Each structure stands twice: as C-alpha cells, then as structure tokens.
Image (cartoon, rainbow, N blue to C red; front, side, top):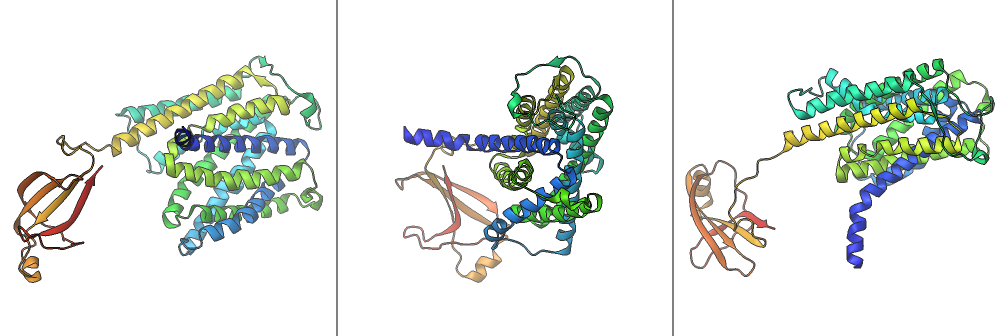
Length: 427
C-alpha cells in the first residue's frame, strides 16, 4: 500500500511542480500590482527583481554546475546580453507598464499569446514550417488566429460587469481610491504594450535556443541572463528615476514584492520549469499556463478590487482555447515527424528475459580478421533464456561494412567460436 502511494506521488510530481510554478507566477502578478498601487516605480521594481535573482541564485548555480560548466566565450556573453535585454529588461518593463495601465487579469490573459507570437516569428525566421497540408499545421494556424481574435475582443469589448466576492480589508487602493476601472485609452495602450512584451519574450525564446546549444547549463545561463538584465534594468532605471528616494526599500509591500518576484519569479521557477521540461517535455509545461490566468483573475477580484467584465472573460477564454490549439498542433506535428515505424517481430522476440547472443567465426589471426572485415561472413544468432537454455538458433549471411569492437572474447568448448560485442537484453 505504501509502495503504491509512493508511485502515485512520483507520477503526480511533475503536475504538482507545475502547479507551484503557476501559483508563483500568479503571486508575482499580484505583488506587482500591489507595489504599483503603493506608489513604487515600475522601473526600479524590475531592476530590484533581477538584482535579487542574481544575488540569491548565483551562488547556488556556481556550486551546483561548477564541474559541468563549459567555457565562457564572447559569443555566449553576447547571447546572454541579448537574452537579458529581450527576456529580462524589455519584457518586464513592457509587461509592468501594461499591468499599470490595465489590470493583472488583462495582462495575464495577453501573456497566453506568446506561443502564437513565437510561432509567427519562428516561421518568419525560417525556424518553423507552416505545414498547412497536415492537421498539426492547420491547428497551429487556426489557434493563432483564434488567439489574436481573443486579444482583440479582450481589448475592444468591455461588456457587463461580473461581480465576484471581495474582501475590502485586503484591498490596497491606488491614489484615486475605489475599484480599479480601465478606460478605453488605457486599455488600448495596455494591450499594445502587452503585445510588445509578447514579441520581446518570443524573441528571447529564439535567442535562448541558440544560446542553449553553446552553453547547455541551465542555471548558469539563467544567472548570466539575470545579471545582464540587472545591469541593463538598473542603468535604465537610474537614467529615468534619478530620485534616490524611489530606490529605498523598507519592511513593507515593496520589499516583499521585489524579493518574491526575484527569488521565485526569476529563480526557483526557472529551475522547476527546466526540470519539468526534461522529465515531461515543453508541451506539458505549456498547458499549465492558463492556470495562472484563473488564479490572477480570482486574486485580482478578491485582493485588488479589480472589476471583471464579460469582454475580459470571453477574450481570455478565446486566447486560452487558441493556446491549446497551437500546443496540440505542435505536439501532433512533432509526433508525426518523430514517429518510428515499429519493426515486425516474432512472439519469441517479445518475450521478457531473453538474451540475444550474436556469434561470429573466429579468425586465425588479427591480420586475417582485418582483411576479411568487408567480406561475406556467416553469423549465428542464438536466443537464450534466463535458464541458459537455447531457444532458437538461426544462420544468416551478412556483409559487414562497419568496424567491429569486441568487448569480451572467449573460446567455446564445442565450436571454437568467439562471441562478438553485441549482447542485447530484451526486457
């Protein structure tokens, strides 16, 4: 019974990890909005986020990957600079500006356009094929169009207000007081900034793919990106917000926001996502993204007093539906490209516990063995079960064109033959 519970927990571990990741991302969105409502500078908040991430995660990455870290080249540094720019400074400043003009729910819904935007950019750069003749390609195109339509509905249609239970004691209002209302101009500019944030994030994904090929250490590359992002965001914030009073952190919501977003949003979640991608693949990780939207919508109505409208719900639903269509199309395409045709085998080949032993005639000398390497030879294949009982024995003729490497050689007492290097255990 205990063993079954352990197996069940082990199978649910990736799902639980991704739920923790989405709860962390939802918390980052809520803390962002709380810090903005408290009067904190958006640019200073982004700079502190990457500073905290670099300081906290940097020593961990140094010790964990100290023996497997490849050589740091100038090309890797340049790619890290671009990753810090597009995946750090630009994307976060654009996103926080969109969050300031709209709401946490609105900005989170627009983030689900990233797979569709990435597909369009990758296709424009020649990294992705349209594949409209296949089902996967049609699903990706249709999902992209549905996602864009949902974003337009989210932007231009407001609809009736949907009232959700809220707790006034937890609200942190802005200087205007009352519930947070989005006017038409703010909604339009917020949607534009959120779309630019998606474009920046998609550009980072393409650059990160190139960087990972040269520098495969996940945590070290993350710290390189975070450190570059910290330098860029700090320089940008100092140029715009020159008042040093804006940089002061006390024991308040500002310190909690930047520390949580830095350690969790840019540190721990990256490692958890990398683990899940390695275990279950990128599609499995992506399907949990809409969970953040649901959590942010609930938290925004309960904690931030955000007014939820019908247009927001319908637009977000279309974006999520388009997201899943793009992901399903991509998974279908990958399955079609990587699917192997199963080889026909006999019932004996599928039996567990069988060992296939390939026996080739021994050569009088190593020289003769080398001369006859490309000649036609007789091969005897025997299948032996776990009780050392021979089940089948077949003789075939094959032309050996590849180099043979013998792992173990010994004389057979009956036939004077040597066993070659292939021992295939069928389980």
